[in-house]
Length: 85
Image (cartoon, rainbow, N blue to C red; front, side, top):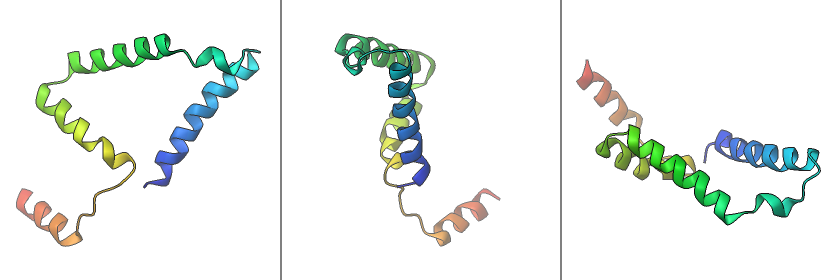
């Protein structure tokens, strides 16, 4: 797992919780299933609207790369670069 993935997740959650605390709100007020469904559903719909199907499906398969980077040998990478050349 790339360290920046973990740092990014922690910063994101920290910003949400910190902002909520600074405004004097209760943590329970941001744990709202309806709001989560609206935000996540709207985001997914907007992404699907602007992305071709094959690109979207490939991106969904690559989501696991955030936490577990695939092992690719340097030799295979070099072969690809030479093939493109």
